[in-house]
Image (cartoon, rainbow, N blue to C red; front, side, top):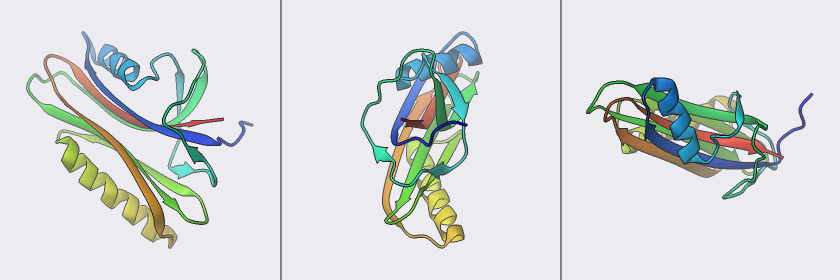
Length: 152
């Protein structure tokens, strides 16, 4: 059983690559988590988890992360990714991730509505809201990535 994470940070990056997978890898490097093994998790931020600006994560670590990513080989298209978390005053938080063919600002509007809906479904009120997003115009093959990294 994995321990419950006690810290979190939001990251985002966008990049080009010779393939979609290479573009994804380069976007992870830009986001600062390219040397980690990502374990995709769903949408709950543990109670009491502390928001930090940076995390030191040893290379090769197994890292829980909620993320949205889009890789596209369509020159000229605009792609975006966003991650957001709403945190209740006396409980846990809810994380949402999003990626699509739209601008960063559109992604931020959509993801805020997603967090609000998730809180309404749980009958909670967010006391704090954090978002990180990125936009990229594809040159050849590009990727936009945004994630919420959980750590110990």
